Length: 92
Length: 251
Image (cartoon, rainbow over all chains, first blue to last red; front, top):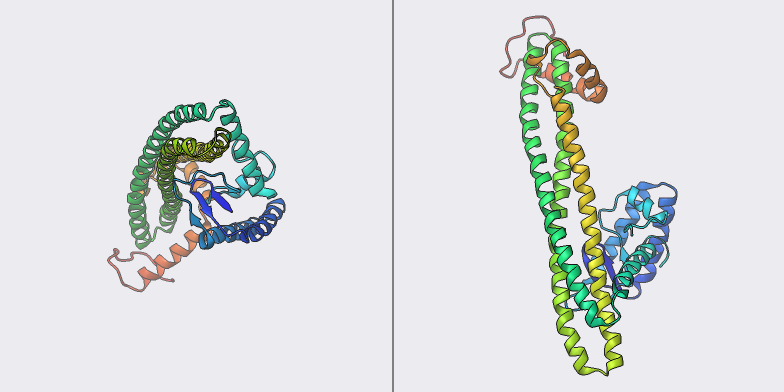
């Protein structure tokens, strides 16, 4: 699967990672919901770690859409909250 | 994928399809892509220029604060050596505030530098992808039937569209950060104007208010600690501080 880290480009990951990422993602959402910043940061860095260890950067001649788009690496907790509330990181 | 990642993808995809829907023919999409890229490119240049300007301003302020920290530290030592603990405390309070501001500025300068690098890399990537799109489109047209080519070209256009949407997002974040930075620079300037980092020798009438605010702003514990440390240093007889003139020998 193809994962984009916003601002950093796309990475190719083995499909098995989808489940791990999905699980971390669900827990991250729960952490944001509970206002647990430390928990969120920890889960978020685990997600980034998966992309860093398993992912290969896509070359520039591959023009494909991502299956998953992750927020910018340095996402602040308040931004994560906005994102979760449905405002979206990218306002229209 | 639900949650954060899913939401993010949904928003980006909505943006891309909005962008690509304007042209039904992928050829037109490409033209639109170019036009959009030129716009983005101008924005990125302006964005980077803004980032650099804000960075310079912050760096200048940091240098000024650094000098003030050294000066205030020296003054605190001298004041203590002369038994003027009150004056030493004032100097240390000012030093603590200046240090806190300095650390904040340093952090922001670092963030700005990252932002600058990221924007430049993003922009380059988009440029290359659009170039690739141009080449690929011709290859696809030559290799596939018209209907198949249409599908494949659309897919490639979506890939480029995502890159564009992402650069747009990076730009927006850079602008937000630059805005925060400007606010911070102005806040430090205000403090400076109010005399919050002035020498203790510059203390005159009308400074009481600043001092009251300062002792509220700075951590009492940190100032106490530093004061105790300075006393210990002076008391142990080391250093080049002026001789103690009044009793203040208990560390």
